[in-house]
Image 1: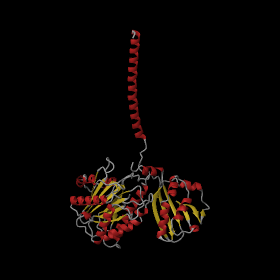
Image 2: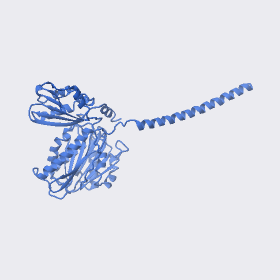
Image 3: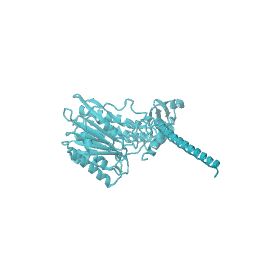
Length: 464
């Protein structure tokens, strides 16, 4: 090899080395730029589950503390490692507790257990020891065979032992994915922390711990006049999808400091529930886990409420209905992907049952709900929903209103109706659909929301 060839080879080697060095530097710069781009995308990308635009503007309300009721929360890592997902409530001796539950034929082991305990209490009231309520999110503990039953037994026995309560005084509720075994060891590992952290001021944290696809925590309550001064009531709920309660994935827990006799409390809860939680529907699907529990601690001085016809009982029932209604409407406002809150009213039906059938048929119709999402005053879909409901209906007696706008009557479009007026109304964030059947005097109401593309996105990715 000549000297010139050797020099040429050396020059090529140096050039190659310089090029490789430059390539490595460029590759490092690319990786750095890609990282910066990812961070920028993460900071500017819309939250896949943003807070519902229909959420209460004031945020979570300031709730009164309930003497005799203490709460705590913990992170067990059931589905997400970075959020509280277990709640414990401890209720003092002398408390009474009532509940209503899903009628689903595939209801969870926790629901079966709670229902059995409430039935027993109605037959044999026993408030000497107090009660406890343990709730987890992230796993419904439903359709898991004997495993689900064993988990409920283990948790109720263990919580009972820690709080010196019989297992029959411990209630559990679970919400989340159906059909996956709940790893009870995760909850067992945080029971000591839950016991140590019990405090009367933790109800707002409890509302956070029971959420699944909810975009905001739900609470309602206040003071009410019971004839002997003011009493306190406060409640929390969770629910966003799979909402069409039939009982009572929807959970609600309400607490008051008044004393209410066990059977009367159960009767009031069941009655109030029918026009509140049972009047809400997001998607027409009834959960395996729907549970509503109401506890009265009796820590407020005064005689127990034991007469359904007394002014004190009526005042309590009105306060409970107010809290139930508020929580039920918040659930509808947090419907998965919802952009509009909808109240469906049906009036002048032949029977209450017919009114409810029509209201639910309208509220649960995907075609009605998607039209609302698209701000399309397609009232023909409402006519369709009325007709398929199975209720007693006569076409030519039917009248339909969007808010105050008369859309249809006497079997046809109303003479004065203008499409532009209907379209303008549908741009509102809150919509009222009123259907007059002209058949009698009975009425019903259902709260619901629209169906948007986000509803599909949320549920398509629920287990991903």
